[in-house]
Length: 252
Figure (cartoon, rainbow, N blue to C red):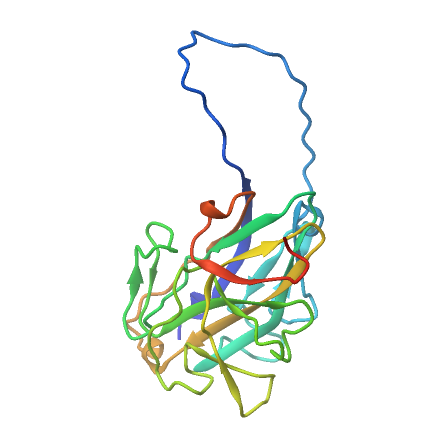
């Protein structure tokens, strides 16, 4: 089995807002303005990405969050199991700015139909092909609820629609099903996909999950290069895709 199939790291953190443009014809306008930029680590940025370093798959070296399901471990592990492997949670997203933000995530390893390969899908970077048998999911849950899923509010971020197929719904190998808590026999089903609305000071937890089927054990299956996911935050809801997964009660 190719060891480097299951790695994804946090790279760019992008923020954006729409710009207004007038219709008047103007040769040029110049206005000198001061500007100042401070660069912060992921945990201290306006959109904070706070890694759960208690998970063996998560690190925050140099202030940058990364998630690694590929590296060998000191105890001999070399990759994920067939089924579902999770970091619960992998990280927290917190709005540390002063205005409400609509947050989405670009996930190049998403694959809504695990029975086929994904290439050039809406959430994939150019040149990355996700082989049949692999899906990487980011599941957003209310803060503190990653190990219980008791609130009933959760969904997959990084795509505009929920996974569409199996195999084996109602188990850890089902793309749309997730255990109610680690070790549980009962399952919840993913019903929402899209973005998250966070008011200033609000946060959500994110479960990182690899779904792998027997198909990926085929030696001829292509490997996936090390890649990044991108968190994007906007001040206007029309800039993000999918529905709002959920909104905190205090959100306006």
